[in-house]
Amino acid sequence: MKTINDLSFTNKRALVRVDFNVPLDESGRITNDARMAAAIPTLKKILADGGSAVILSHLGRPKDGFDPKLSTALLVAHLQDLLGVPVHHVDEVIGDKALDASKNLPFGEVLLVENVRFHPEETAGDVDFARKLAELGDVYVNDAFGTAHRAHASTAVVAQFFPEARCFGLLMADEITNVNLVLESTNHPVTAVVGGAKVSSKISILENLIPRVDHLVIGGGMAYTFLKAQGGQVGNSLVEEGFLELARKLVHTCKERGVILHLPVDSVNADSFSAEASARMTPAQEIPEGWMGLDIGTKTAENYAHVLLNSAVILWNGPMGVFEFAAFAEGTKKVGEAIAQATEKGAFSLVGGGDSVSAVHQFGLVDKVSYISTGGGAMLEYLEGKTLPGIKALLEDAII
Image (cartoon, rainbow, N blue to C red; front, side, top):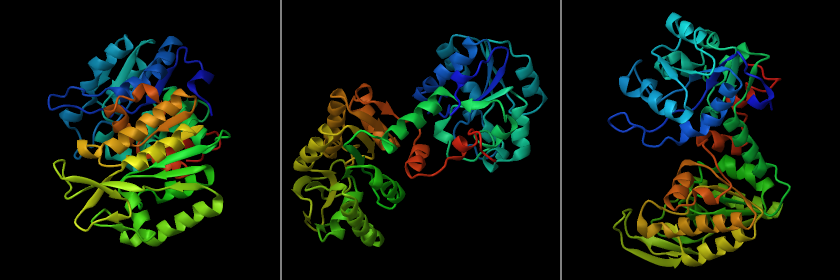
């Protein structure tokens, strides 16, 4: 895996694909700059070498070409503050203006081009569009793990035009390394905590994880499909009736492979899906009709914490309940705190997936876990065992 540390960018224009898809308020101000901050080490390395950086990114989901509310011009001032060097902007992605701006960009400075998704050719993976993008740089660097699962022009196709000069950015390399620390761990026990609403959205992840882990901890809405599949009474809890047999097969596979499967033994239930709902705790397999499980119970949280505190490697993907509602947040909080405690004891912990990352922030655990993935959908597909186009394109034997 060639990274920017393997190359010198002296007197080179680096064409850098980043993920600056940051949230903006109605005034166009950035409300969370985490994705921008994550790319700064890569950009600083390029500039410190004496190179320049031409940055490609998408922002939002534009529908009909140019949209001033989604222009990368909104990011220039903050990027300049983060880098401490001049950041220029061009209101083109391809074309003479963009090409001239890249060719005349002083070394040590940055050019941010317009939102690549203003062109439908970007998401279509158009080769001619990618060829024109390639003219903007001498070296291609992909540091956008969050889009690595997309075979778009700027994330995958463009790499073919840099057969000897393409590499991973530091963020991309870190993401791949840290996920592989879980998937290929030689330290045991390895525990995967998988939550979220539906079994159907996590089937491939579960199937790929079972051969790699010692403990599989299940929470969230998906737990009730497993509980019903084993004969439990789950009231009005979320259950995917079409996946009961699959849940039974996954339980059987865990037994065959010697993986210890942990399911809730008690449940915090609500009489409606609402932050103001009445709440009561029952055994997880004895939820009354008219009630729905929205969080793991106290005993379950204790059981899960015990497993986590005795783990060497931990993956957390998905909350234990509807943590957005205060009355049903305790299970997710307790599991997060246990992961933090295990990390303090020396375990390696990886947190990935939008809801899990939100929970880590909500409960003040950001600095208490080993690694938080920026990948979202990309990390989920990587956990499923899929080859991501943005990664494949950078490998030496890749054929686009």
